[in-house]
Image 1 (spheres, rainbow, N blue to C red):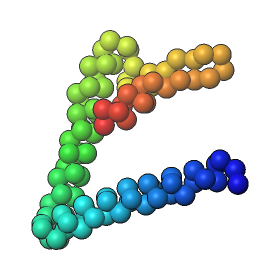
Image 2 (image 1 turned 135 degrees about the vertical axis):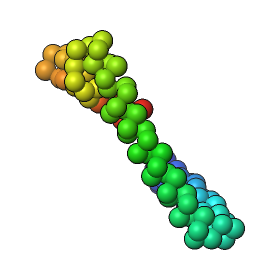
Image 3 (image 1 turned 180 degrees about the vertical axis):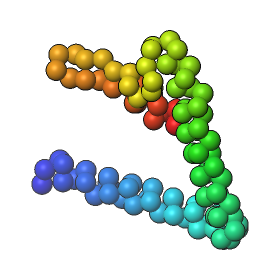
Length: 96
């Protein structure tokens, strides 16, 4: 029996424990708050996502375009050899 085979069951047990704990927490929340609490959580999450997207599009992109002479934060990139590294796209997704 190889060492990798001996490690696999332990890794699988830990993965199952993480999933079980996560689902347990979700069902505990659902039991305490009910479907109304779950709906409110989804609504708040959606509103925060839209607010962050608007912040990027309407405030941060124009400020960055002043300094870098670009129209969109996602256009910021540099090339190393034949590889284009789009750090502006990463930064935009990180903030958003």
